Amino acid sequence: MAIRNLRLEGDEILKKKSREIENVDEKLQILIDDMIETMHRYNGVGLAAVQVGILKRVIVIDLYDNKGPIAMINPVVLKTKGEHEMDEGCLSFPNQFAKVIRPEEIVAEYTDRKGKRKKITAKELLAQAIVHEVDHLNGEVFIDKIIPGTLEYIEPEK
Ligand code: NI
Image (cartoon, rainbow, N blue to C red; front, side, top):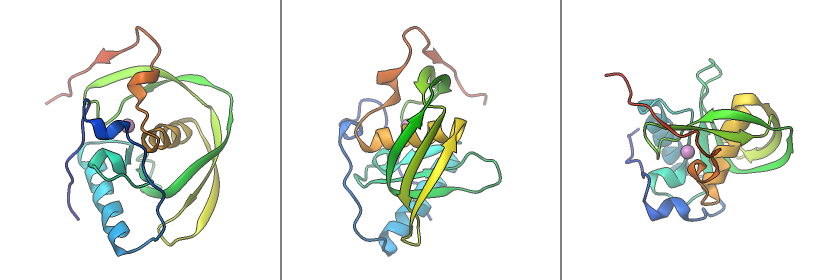
């Protein structure tokens, strides 16, 4: 496993649309492992492949709730329910946090690491993370959807 370079604010790749993945092969498994390691290194709850410079539709999420990291290949949000204001950040926008309106609940579909298509209902933080990461796959970043006036810069404690 290896930590990959994060693509940051201002990098044009973040505005590009990622491509569907056709094969769940060894190369993809390595990418997923590296993405998980990179997410953990920077204490993120989610990461999309585009954030390490790969335009493939794969995301990883870890809410640090003892369920372990999950990888979602070709994720699609099928349904959303409700909406609420959530605090949000992004590894590509270090130290920036703001409020964003996100669905309270979603139904999503994805292919897992074994190549099996799955459907899940996700709420709260997990729903927020999935929607945020799927946005990345469509070239959308959270900073463009924040509630005006809510952006804060918070330096991490050393
Ligand atoms: Ni992000």
